[in-house]
Length: 332
Image 1: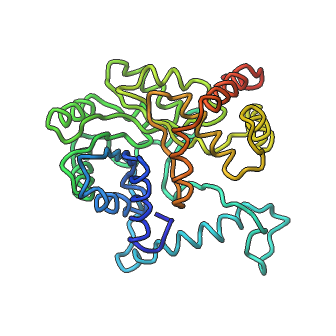
Image 2 (image 1 turned 45 degrees about the vertical axis):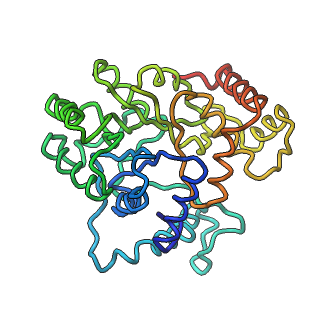
């Protein structure tokens, strides 16, 4: 939603993805300050039977006065280009009279206000006292009906509990999800949370047919465990966020190793993102790897990774094995 200041610009990005073979789209009521579902619904209107949609229950955007909503795209651009880089600079480098970031600085992701987004290695510490909305059948049906209306559809392919904690679940909610499948309003349901919480839910409710969506980064080593327990398959995201904790190599070192194994130029643009997405595809070969982008050329580049020569896939598997064998990278 921060890709352009106009609706037509955002729709063109979705068209680019669709034209390059991406037919699954992930959204939520929280995204785009509440505007993402309606935009995706507008895009999907003429091709609903040719794509699948994930949306979610649980997290909602802050309510904004109607008169301020047209200014939200501009506020996102200012936040991304000015405020985030300024906050990321070390205190000694901050100058009130020079608010712009240093040349070449790249803004990193920050949590949206009000979000309970977990990290890929969430430990369960600092959990909220309760969910952002009641985990009741009535609340679930109410939020689902709103999402159906925003998306302009009569069914959701994958309906996920957004940043769900295992303590939130109850028999009434689970029964309601099963009823919604029988009614045809959702086709599959599941959880879109951090790895620790997702694992607890899968262990505590092993008989439930969960679709699972989790972050999957460099330092995560148990993706195969989730692959075996997700129904019908696993969705992973955030693979482009290189985690430098736990003994992961530097981005430069990783590019050098990848270039050596695949006979590529280590300074080639997009080399690191190509490696991280290729590794994500190898870790989750039967599932779906999600990514987000504000640029059409990045979307085109990423879709080309599905047609990489076998040597690239083999090199990615070797790097995955090397990371797993590293003593400092063993899971705790």
